[in-house]
Amino acid sequence: MRARGVMLLRGLSRCLTVGIIRGFTPPPETPRLSWAAARLRFHSAGVFGIREQTLVAVKPDGVQRRLVGEIIQRFEKRGFQLVGLKLVQPTQDVLSEHYHDLHEKPFYSALIQYMSSGPVVVMVWEGCDVVRVSRMMVGDTNPADARPGTVRGDWCVHISRNAIHASDSVEVAKKEISLWFHSSELVEWESCTHKNTYNI
Ligand code: IDP
Ligand code: MG
Image 1 (cartoon, rainbow, N blue to C red):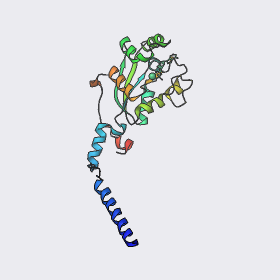
Image 2 (image 1 turned 90 degrees about the vertical axis):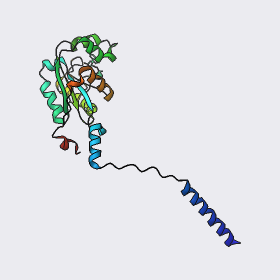
Image 3 (image 1 turned 135 degrees about the vertical axis):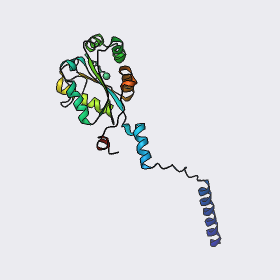
Image 4 (image 1 turned 45 degrees about the vertical axis):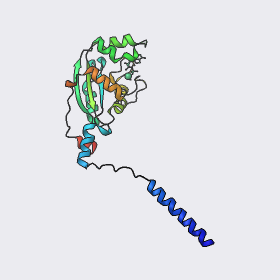
């Protein structure tokens, strides 16, 4: 009687195991990329954000105070790659589009007046996490809160004259780059320091 019970249990457990295995469909194999193909794909598609771009502008006060060279140097030395650069006298149209989100702020008209008071140097910088890192390098909007070592924390005193602009998100960067630059003004180039910067 006991032996019969054991056999029944064994049979039941076998049925269950076979049923589970039959019902199991393994996921399709993920095709493997060769290292060279993967590197090329990552590189050109900008995977890992290596091709991320941001707009940085030295504002009229920064240009007047001859800060352009030092600001460029900070971005270069950090390891970012310059892909666009020009000195422009901004038009009202470009400025009102650029600062569209602030048009209801009490300082808006003073801001537009200040930004159109002289030439600005607009740049597109490229690299891993360039949007986030640029914001850190630029410092808080109000220079009184900006840490030493940031552009605003080293060279500015007042919020209305804070020397530099940097896009605050990847989406905003795309819009600002297309507002200030024609695509033909941006240069795609391979830096010879790339391997030492990214290890890829
Ligand atoms: P951000 O430049 O750090 O991104 P936003 O808030 O986007 O700061 O403001 C855009 C610009 O408007 C600032 O860089 C600064 O020139 C100006 N601004 C912002 N807040 C004030 C203010 O309270 N008084 C005067 N100007 C301001
Ligand atoms: Mg902003």
